[in-house]
Image (cartoon, rainbow, N blue to C red; front, side, top):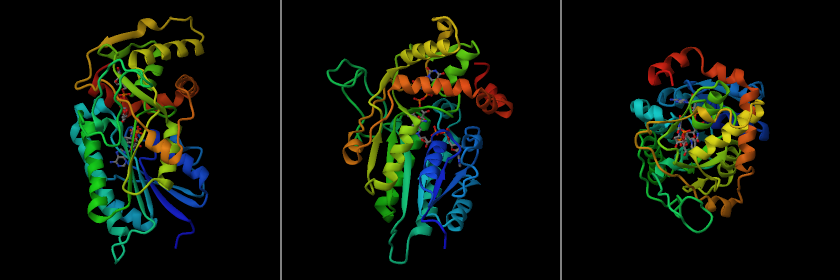
Length: 367
Ligand code: NAD
Ligand code: DAU
């Protein structure tokens, strides 16, 4: 028997969002053992968890979620009773260049975890008492919204993604996440596996890999490199501070209704170009540069293939059922994020050097 009240497996815990989820749970639940399972791809970095690595209720296991035998043995060895599944290939541009890796990890990896959980958790009479498979997904599965000029709260369009919005993914990344969501629902509907799914909007904050818009551009401004804005910079995303997402995951893991899907978002829509201008302003100010000094770095480049125009999440269900709401205003969160990257330049250098740099140059040239 385990000494812990619960044994929770967090997959992808060395990545951006996963590391914030692991930290929150290790610090908040001393009577839970948090087992971080991660393959440590280019996006996984154990340095993200230095501050909790020695905690007695934390441990790390290096594994590939698509390795069914290994995943099964971990669930058995650590007596896992709850899974928070974040491990994924997560970058849209990479999925356009290398879709197979996305299908393997996001689809086959999720299926392998589901099947391992089902086999270990189902008792003789088919009951899954006390178990939960929590699947972390994305708003991109819903496709793209129009830009129009509505009345009301949403500044860029009248329509928002609801939990009932029909799936309509466009990129290999979102198609692979949509497929994984369908498998999770199928395991609930077919086998009775207790599941909760959440679909979240764009996250930002410390420890995000600097290939995504915000950390890439902070880093480029620091080094006076061009800021490659896709198309005309008119695309809209709905941004949420990563710690607010981690709080929502914790809340849903403990209180979400089994079999339900919950949207998570900040009611915080921004056009890319407006974020870029704001970032330039904040970074220049914090670096002591004159206002507008880095404006000329903004460079419009060829658009992303299949680029979704607008994402916007309606998270009223989560707010109504569990009282969750984002804690930070975007401008405050963005400034906090910029400060983190300026204070942790070694982290950025570490994750973008060596093998990663060679890989990146092969994929994207010298951008
Ligand atoms: P990330 O790319 O920063 O981290 C992914 C982690 O998964 C890394 O630690 C990586 O090593 C690990 N991983 C990848 N393949 C693996 C495999 N085969 N086996 C085990 N581990 C593997 O991703 P993120 O941005 O933190 O996203 C985490 C999850 O949240 C993903 O499922 C993503 O789809 C979802 N999500 C992300 C956002 C966002 O804005 N970043 C928004 C909504 C949902
Ligand atoms: O909506 C949730 C999703 O948000 C997550 O599921 C994904 O894992 C996460 O990567 C993110 O996807 P996006 O494609 O929206 O994020 P990204 O940071 O790559 O791009 C944000 C916007 O900025 C998008 O419209 C494309 C644009 N962009 C991005 C990069 C990297 C640029 O204009 N230039 C760039 O160099």
